[in-house]
Amino acid sequence: MNKVDEVYEEFWKVIIEPNGEIDFDQVKKELYDYACVMHEVAKVYCELTGSRISKPNTKAESVISVVNEHYCDYCPYMDDCV
Image (cartoon, rainbow, N blue to C red; front, side, top):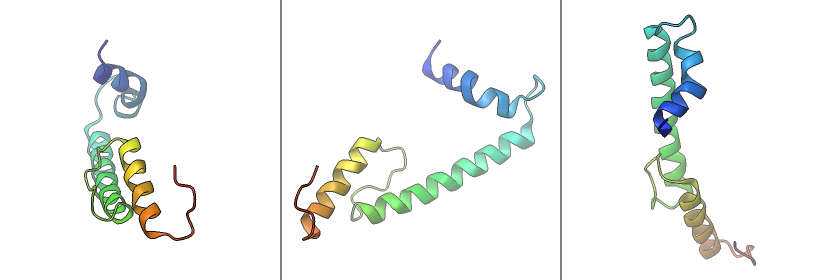
């Protein structure tokens, strides 16, 4: 089973197929929520990384690395940066 199918089976199926058939109203709600999250995450990434990252699908470790670099450069109180 590929990763997409695995995530669907383990996470989404019970949400959008509660009775064994796709509930399109629920799909629309989930897509709306996902779009909101993607939009808001992009704003947070942009703010925390000094506008270096804004793509919401960026891997967490990349965002964390840029945030650490950004705050190590600008925060005099950070003696030990990771």
